[in-house]
Length: 161
Image 1 (tube, one colour):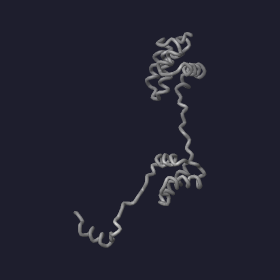
Image 2 (cartoon, rainbow, N blue to C red; image 1 turned 90 degrees about the vertical axis):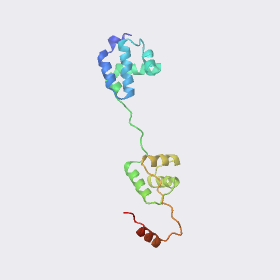
Image 3 (cartoon, one colour; image 1 turned 135 degrees about the vertical axis):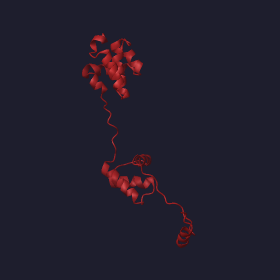
Image 4 (cartoon, rainbow, N blue to C red; image 1 turned 45 degrees about the horizontal axis):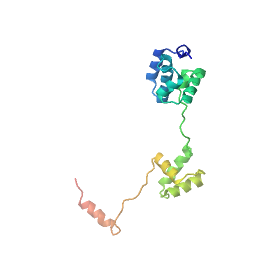
């Protein structure tokens, strides 16, 4: 196949697009087309190997270019993972954690199961807390023999300017 005639974009245009593209996958896809256009790679398999693709992936990429063009190849279709809890449920969970009646991951897991109807594992609750930036809050240890009145007197006498 004569890729130089089939590919509509010029070598300079492809090189410019490749340098402007910030998304690494999209940059590799433009590089794939550029390698075929300039003749640096004679086949789809060679062009794919230069950017780290298998032969079948290269074939799919060429098919996508022929059907939809370079613009479709540059688009990112990644939408991210879907969360189990919506925003309102997450806010309710964080508020409940502030009430200090949930002290273990198992209790948090049970709350999520009963109140929100969403099943989590212990590890999943741990990742959820990390994502929501919830940390374990504990009080500082105090001596059981400590008396509040004597502590106040000590603070008043030892105030540093």
